[in-house]
Image (tube, rainbow, N blue to C red; front, side, top):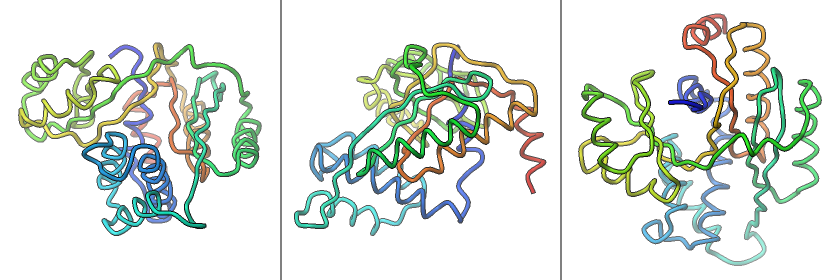
Length: 252
């Protein structure tokens, strides 16, 4: 799949440890609150909320936390939370292009924190959005399924592109407006998604095969992801699977 970023795949493979789970739940709740505030608290009538809830569940967020976030968004009073959605763009180590999607109640704080990460890693804030395009991304675990059957089902459902099997799953790309229809068609065909989300996908990628550079890029990405106000980070790098395995083996 030409241009597909591997950062989302890497994040799924690395997983979220207990130390970061609380921060992850905060980000997930923030997305639920924003989606519910914009489109209402009914996930059947609010597709963005449905996706946010599905993502929260796939990350083992307790049902009570999800319910509380929706109630906080649809309620009223002094504790009602309002978040502003902001996008930052820039170049990181190895001239990797990144787009950062943030939600914040303090624009100045978020901008300062993002700029600090770029400065510490030798990056610069600059326009790079032209290197990306808006896509729907569905990850389907194979779980014994025939990859060819899954691919044909995805094409029949209206997928724009279908990747090769990687890490036990296949990535299906759609036009943004087709994401839900393709996900539902695949589910009806017996192929349940482990994730389905709107994404900024690169049109070309930066191939990284040097271990030192790969560590720098991954460290930069993780620092951005760890910022409280950052919801998603999209990037255009590609690290070979064998190098990723080597790097993960070095982590104690």
